[in-house]
Length: 230
Length: 226
Image 1: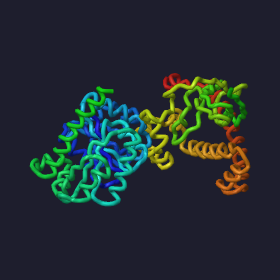
Image 2 (image 1 turned 30 degrees about the vertical axis):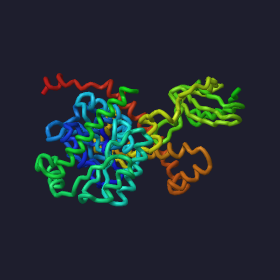
Image 3 (image 1 turned 135 degrees about the horizontal axis):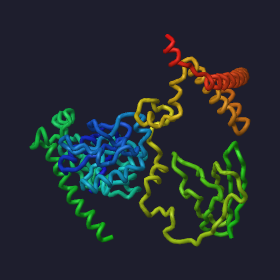
């Protein structure tokens, strides 16, 4: 199962959702933000090296942290040398070994945002209950539709409980919505390079991420059924 | 039946081919290049849809003309292209129904990588690896000679850029870029002087090498005499 976590707008929490979902799904998280990576960097080879043909996808997976991670380099030269079209093959190689892969996609609508969608079986759209974030989420929804990647779920991040805007998002974007509440725990966990599960296993955000993971597991069955029927 | 017209030009060592395919009815055609390799036109660094290593495939509409062009480092030949008409088949390449490829996405959405010009030099491991090997022996040259060679090399690079403009507009832009015609004239004079100095150096170098080959210090004999 390959999931792309996307959203269009920067700063809505795509990396946070990817990392925490990676924890709940026991998946490898690939930092697909080739230009401006956010997830912790390791000391070994990274995605830039893999996309430039200097390392294999599997040797770049870092299993030393709480979540298995394929980190991304931070240099301009590395971004320039990486061939973005090699992402699909890289992701499939990782999925063939680890089964579950979550790709943290970059903001925007250029090819680096489109390629994770192409590589994924389904996508999750992260947004916030604000107008600019929802507008960008709509654009990304259209991009996913054009590429042919089904939308598994909408994640309304850092939102107050029972927020009307979040509830309406489901109809606007055409997928069920999970709300992840605003919480200092998530920020604290992220700062220390941990998923929120590791520091507060019973907290509301942890439950929200776990419910997204459950929903996606269900979706996985659906995807498999569709594939068999075809 | 579709018809093909072509023009072949050479620009320096590059052959440029332009072709127009016209058809009275809708037909799928393939243009097979007689030149190899084919340097296809590119969008966002990826060959335009329809191009492959040996030619181009497209659909020509009824009473329409499709114009294409490509370059090749090969010698010009006539005819540069062969027109092959293909039977229209359903699900032919270019059908929008199927999922796009990575290259399609790159072509449509645009390359997200930073431009090559702003990439810092000599910082990454890649660049160090891709540094031309023949540059390494330069470090064995005396520093003064090395900087003199570097200066000449820079001047030659500028001159090479000046030598390539294809038309008057481009030439004017190149002149403006290099600070006016006077500076270019000075560069030309300097290059002539460089050429003289380099050939003088070559003569001197050959003479010295010849003398060096015939000279041998009898070190052992001298050691014994001391």
